[in-house]
Length: 435
Image (tube, rainbow, N blue to C red; front, side):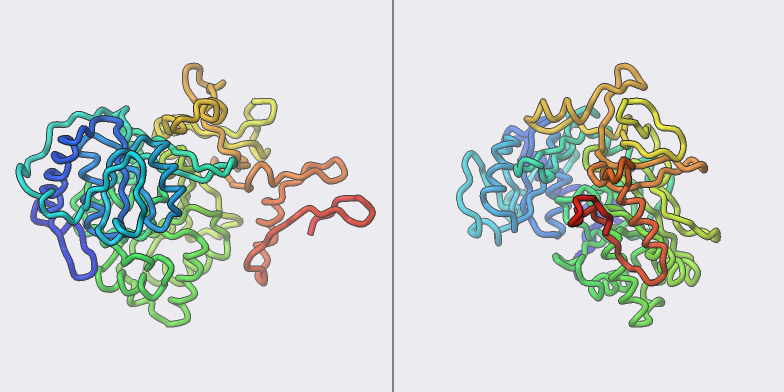
């Protein structure tokens, strides 16, 4: 598919051949600067064709990309550069002067056309499946962000599963709208390139604007996209209020993750889009530490749902619901959701103690590791998992253990309740009450 359109941004289009050749040229320049397997290369750009080319070039050079939001405070950026050992940062010109001088870092303008000269052939493959693909920083409880290291084979496993489960082809268009500092962006950035499909890049900041999203869907005939559930609600309200179902009729499949998806959101989606246009909604769940998503559930069905599960494990992933005593919980009993399999991160960069704590030995499969999510879940009789909130949302009142997330889920089933938060408060009599 060398002459197929690969990347669309506003009125600019690049073919597969153009993207590949530019990425190859930049990859060779990065290799000349010493980039090799497990080298971390920072990228500080807005959503743009340069973002795609930069990420592809880092991967082709054999390195791992580190997405940096240009709006991050300087001390956070310096911490990420120091912690990751990243000595090269690909940057757009507009951000070079806006940022101070960072220690031990060379900024390379990705808009410098001299980078895109010379040999356009694919560089020799030097990275292996167990080498790093990317490092994404998530907020840490100590106040310092922690770098999650994801390896190539974990990314390949995740995208191969997605293509098998939700196949896309040359006629499909993915809308890339997730900021690249969030790991949901990984499949938006890469999946299309496995199949000859097309990626449409939403204008920077457009992910917060339902009008811009609708415009992009209509103009580019987008077929596949993602929402966090709260933004999905805003989008559906906008579509319903404006009566513009026809404008988004190209949509075939929509994925939701990043927050708990509730029954009201699913019912509204199915009423507006599934029943009218056949667009399907899929609930995905997974932490950054397990390569984007580890479970899936199809929400668009003729059957009436009682709740919205997070579903069943994706390929080459094992999910366990574990008790405090480190045993497996029976069906219907809540416990900590733990993950094993090909999606697990290598660990946290330069945080061996935390890595050992969170990526523990798997007692159910000797020799394997298991990631402890801190999320509460339970198996349902049909083999799906129900997400119940964070473990620290479990409270004890009068000796009873109460899952606040479970009560919130029940409240959300009431037709007049849109959002619900349940807290435990101490009354004047010293007893705890729910409110």
